[in-house]
Amino acid sequence: MFSYVKALQYSQLPINISRTWISITRPLTSTSNNDIPNFDMENPFEKEKPKCILCKYDITPDYKNVKLLSQFQSPYTGRIYGKHITGLCTEKQRQVEWEISKAQRAGIMASYLKEPCFIKDPKLFDSENPIRPHRFE
Amino acid sequence: MITYELMILFRLMSKPELVNTLKRTAQTLYNRGGIIRKLENLGTRDMPFKISSHGVVYNKASYYLFIFNSPPASIPDLLDEYERDIDIIRRKIFKQETPEFKECTLHEELQPPPYRKSVQELIAQARKLDKPKFKYNTGLDYYPFQK
Image (cartoon, rainbow over the protein chains, first blue to last red):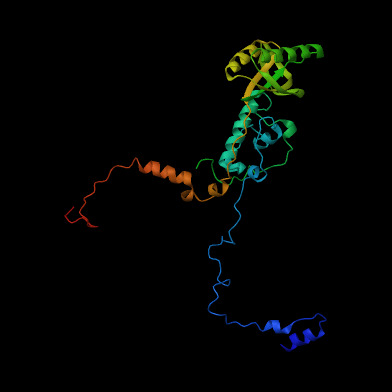
């Protein structure tokens, strides 16, 4: 307390000390109860929900975007990786598979290999370590 | 009105020939009551796999994309007409559609199996196949007689 008063003395600011003596007892007639915590508020500690990479950046796969689609293809066999490897949500995985199928039918994307020009593309996921053992439920 | 995309692969041709073929392709569209919204040249390049059409094996193609509107009934006719054109290696017509937005469900899918809705549905489906069990309706929680 002493140091606090001293600090006040040294400080040049015009501080109103009487402000510190606010009465704790409130008149009974007052209806405002601002001090009661809001129990209906959302959980402030809730974790952010994980999102798949396509939902995170709001990407809709398109069959003409072969560079993107080929990232979901195995460089060895051209097979489409399952959602246990790609880490996509069910809907995005379905879209990716459908667009790859369209691109292959249209003759713009290879089906038995990943095209050599896309081999050095950055990896979106680790195909060696799937998040689940298989793509079924 | 449905917007379609026509992905078309032409064989390698000289420029005047290519112009002719493009005009012919567009004219076919107009004749079937279609209108062209956009025409894109996606370049001439090696195909990802060889394609045999009209008795010739092709390794290279010129890629073109037509975005057009046309009555849905005319689509089979268009495909048929383009199939008979010997300058066309491959043609595909896709509907242009914007998928409706769906919230990412990854957080549900990452849960352990018994908490996943799809797994719960599977279990409920399997429970339906269980043999019916006779209920004694005695109101007791044990069997009162000798078994």
